[in-house]
Image (cartoon, rainbow, N blue to C red; front, side, top):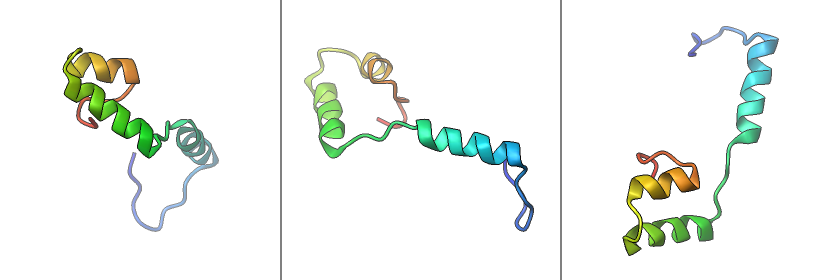
Length: 60
């Protein structure tokens, strides 16, 4: 949900945004490299790899 410039967020919207920010997975450089190398191996499809890692294919 986008807001117009200059509008204030409600308290509930701020809480939801903070929770989303806190629950996002942050991958280290080593994890990113491992995921890409697993994809290049070709043992599993990219779709299967992404489901296993919990990431979107477009992010891969």
